[in-house]
Length: 326
Ligand SMILES: [Fe+2]
Image (cartoon, rainbow, N blue to C red; front, top):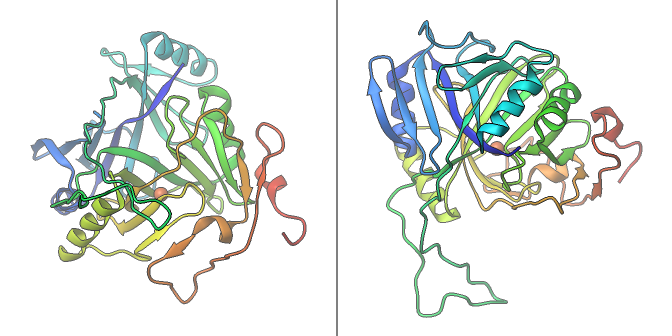
């Protein structure tokens, strides 16, 4: 089996016009647009779809308020899709569309689907190499210039969930996701078995409830991310913490409040992992940020810490809480 990432992310939104303006400004390419909604297509071949919250054809809401209504994961082959259908039908209702798409719910109550995904080459070229003091790679050549950001892929989604252990076990044990890292006592990162970005899914402790945190769209480089961030600032879209880099995953990020629900993120420069990677346990304040461009007064950033290897295949989140000082 290989899951290839998010094939379609479907949202139900309260104000379609405002939501569409945000994602138009964000740089997504609309390929269908009418009174019911907008479908954006990413260069990898995935779709991001906005529909009005009260559209009777949407799957039932699983969150309070607007935001995701379904996450459809892309699958490599019909044999994989059949295997997923058989596995999940053991303990839950799995509905199959005439085109073969599967629909069900995960252990956190999130609507999920599965569909064949012919994931495209991203079509990026001429990406600049970073000159630094220990290695000049770009001689007699300026960097690639971007006029605007055009996100290439859906990188990850993040939810607060009532029971992280139960939510994560479903994806790891039933769907072959790889655990990639843990924030001690807080949350777990996973990637699809057919993807190498540091994470495609992150679940964290939601204080007893299920809520949506954010979706991340991948751009080519930090330059493209910054051009996008400037464009969004000019259009009046706001960010709480602005630009930064996570220590876990190395992702450079720029989060914005989305009028469609939760936050939406540009991300770049992920770590890429394969099955040789050994997941680690990180203290939250150490792992979350390497740096932030603007430091909020209440920011908890630790410059010292350790990332220790995970013991066992999939530990319980409570067992990862540090007993004493690092
Ligand atoms: Fe993120």
